[in-house]
Length: 94
Ligand SMILES: [Zn+2]
Image 1 (cartoon, rainbow, N blue to C red):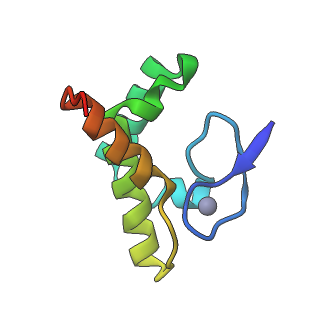
Image 2 (tube, rainbow, N blue to C red):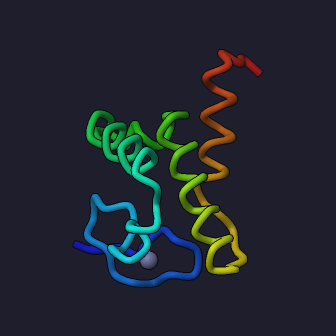
């Protein structure tokens, strides 16, 4: 099983369970890598990491940094997940 790398504009096949292809993963600062790995491992069941604010903020930051470094324009899919997760974590009933 493989999927596309999550960096904007990158279609390098990436093993499922990996956030990015190796080239892009190496561009992610270590503290962000740690957060992404830890939260992913803890929450991989039922894709719970997709509603985890810590995981999603790290993912959004990592993707945006790489996009800026490579001058890539595009939609960061994690941004939407993060907005939703933040709304939920505020205990919003709205
Ligand atoms: Zn990539």
